[in-house]
Picture 1 (cartoon, helix red, strand yellow):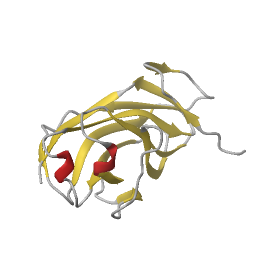
Picture 2: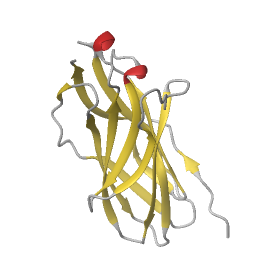
Picture 3: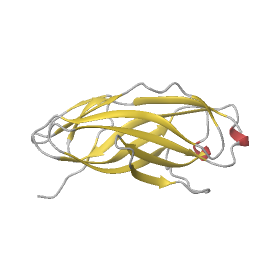
Picture 4: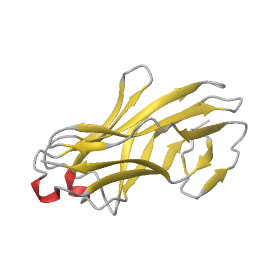
Length: 166
């Protein structure tokens, strides 16, 4: 059968599609700090577990900037899994504008077997021209995920705050 995609953006999601559900939660390992031009910084660590009886596909994460920095300071988003492998990239080159209407998609294509748990890091790739944004706060939150399964978790998931420096 074809794989359907569910995007969840409510405050609390706990629904079931068949017997497949992905549970998502934040892992608060980050403390923030200062970010400089051209760097890629982790903005969120997420633990995801397939608590259902069927396999599930995760296609990515929707994020939005809630700090005082302009989304123009971010030229890309990437995802890395718990094996250290790059799972997806949106933008990443100077002049790219991954944010549209206040949101951006951090892609990943990952299969989850029943009972499987995985960790993901979402990173923001900063522009090489940050002088106009010096002193502002970069704070991204995960507003929803795209998956073939139902989602259980609390959204939005607040990310780490970084202060932009040159």
